[in-house]
Structures are given as structure tokens and as C-alpha cells.
Image (cartoon, rainbow, N blue to C red):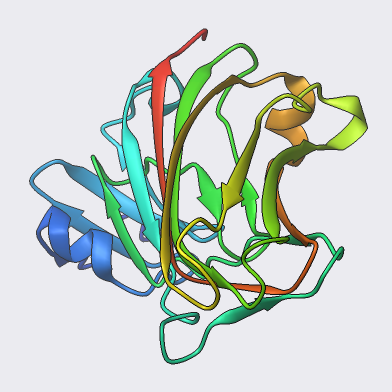
Length: 211
């Protein structure tokens, strides 16, 4: 008797809205479907696998809010010690599923293609114990000599000791091949005294795609 092989396999995929897909905990290989397409969890992102379209060429934005460091639990900066700005991306809002420009695990800003251009907004609250002599510097850093040394910001504490200051700054930059392969990151350093930051938000928008 001739063997018969079953070549038809049925898999039920959970139907969700795009807002629900944006908010779920991402599981590797887990699939969901909405009116805009079929999505799969892959490397900490929900990627649209059908219908396929060149997401690397599309323009979009994403916002990442940290919830670890708040007014009740401020992030301390030692005098003269540079560290990467913490952001655990506990809350993410995207223009569309699959648009991601930050990896909260590595704390690195990511890019799609070399020569793409982006706008980056960083927001946080901060204070310094000795406002007269303390400054905060923030610097964009990259691997293998990516030339972002001039993308910097500075916080001056004009209100006085231990008083809350609001920092909001917009930066523009392009991505090179090192950026695409390795990512970049924001470094922060307090000089002249200790300081604290909290309520950290990143907003990243891709403004031009080279691909």
C-alpha cells in the first residue's frame, strides 16, 4: 500500500489589534495577526512577516519610557564617572509595529541602513547637590570611530541645590555602517559634584531612508 504524507498543517494564530500587539510581552517565535498583517516575535521585536514590505525603507518613530528611575528612585551620578543613560523601555509607543530604534537590553540606539538620518529627543529630570559647580554632560558614542563626538548636550543647574530641573534636547544624526552593525549609545557624566536623573524618555524618529 502506498504511503500517504500529510502536507497540510493548520495553525491557529491569535487575532489582536495593532495596539495590543504593540503592548504584549514579546516571545521569540510567537505569532499574532491583525488587520495590518501577520507578526512574529523575533529578537525582542514584533516583526511583520506578511505581507512583507521593506520596513528598513519606511519612515516612522518610537518613544521609550523608563520606569525604573523615578522621583522615588533617582539614578545617582558620581562626580567624574561617565555611564550609559539607563532606559528600560518599560513603556513603548510606536508609529507602527516593527518600528524600533532602541534596544533596552543593550541600551544601544539602533539604525536600519547606512546613511539613514534620524532625530533623537532625550528628556529627563535632574538635580545636583551643589548647583554652583556641577554640570551634566551627555555624549553620543559609537563603536570603531563612528564620528559622533560633536553630538553633545549640557545641563546647568540654575535653580539651586537639590532643585528639580527639566532637560529636553533634540539631536540630529546619520547612521554609518558601524552604527548599523553595532549600535550607538548615550553616555552621561556629572562633573564638579554628584547629580541625579529620573523620568527618562527617548523619542526617536527616522526622517530619511537611504535604502
